[in-house]
Length: 332
Image 1 (tube, rainbow, N blue to C red):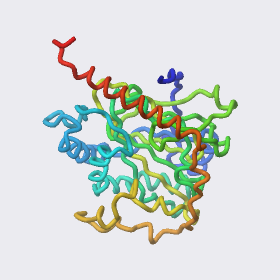
Image 2: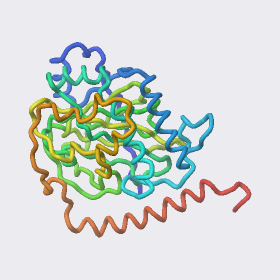
Image 3: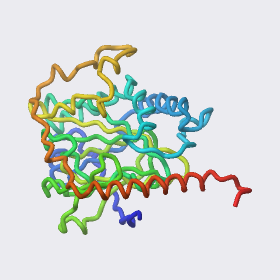
């Protein structure tokens, strides 16, 4: 059963603070997020979306032809971690434009103001391929800290590759939640299979979100509780990227220096790139490696029985929903 969606308030727009590092830091410390309109050039996002939809069309996930950029899904939805998902993700991970987006001058300048000189993006970039009509695996409320560890000052940038109004499933933020510490975990079918257990003090806090446009950027630190809204568009996939930045000299874990899911080596990913400028750039940056703490990421043992039950229910539900949506009009 999909829980009822809460009401959402609009986000505060932070563009007026773009030249003021202390003001950006103060707003982030107060609200736990920063939202910017039109920060990135749409031509850069469009070029990456062209390459991503080219891959999705080539493997048959979306309709090709002149409408390819709309990313109209035509296959049974899948989710992160399934073999079909990696058919797309492994190819997208090799795109030079994908990794270069994290180094866009406007983003790096903003992160320097917010996190200080020497702030840099983790090489681990995340492409999100979110199917429509697949609400059970919508990203649940969670904090990034348990998945990345290292410094709690780690700051995520969430960027849609096209306009993403609320019904297409953008992110939402729970303002002020970063001041509640590291929250307990429970199982969820969505990405990472984990969700934060919210304390009573946050249960009545209003979530904030926006109708995102291409070029908008949302920032939030590793302890801010965030979630995705369900993609309720009847046919279109939501395509977005996550990049994470950290202050110079602070700790990170080895996982943050690997490609997402660590299925390929950096040598494999770099093969065919036109430039070497961004290859292994982090090796010249200032940070300290700390060990991964599995206890921060572990679920209670009894949650895996629940996971098996929910997974079986989900599999039947998405098959039935997909067949119903694609049934010819003349069938009963």
